[in-house]
Amino acid sequence: MKKPDQQEIGLSDHERTPCEVWTRVMGYHRPVSAFNNGKCAEHAERRLFRESMMH
Image 1 (spheres, rainbow, N blue to C red):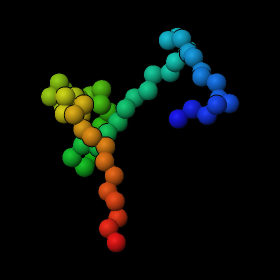
Image 2 (image 1 turned 90 degrees about the vertical axis):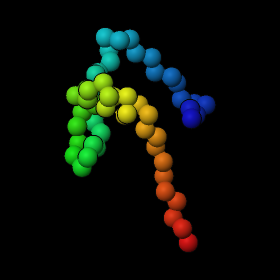
Image 3 (image 1 turned 135 degrees about the horizontal axis):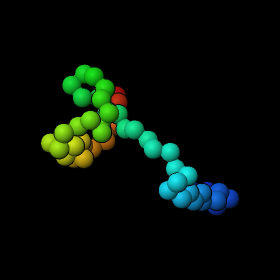
């Protein structure tokens, strides 16, 4: 959520820095760029969830 006093920063493509995304797979970390087509599709279907603490 953007605050009213914040300005939006616009960058052109040549000003951006590539970012490598890593994820945990089967107990170890791997870059998503090294995934095969099947694993890329599986990664795209993942959902983030948070467990709530039960009292």
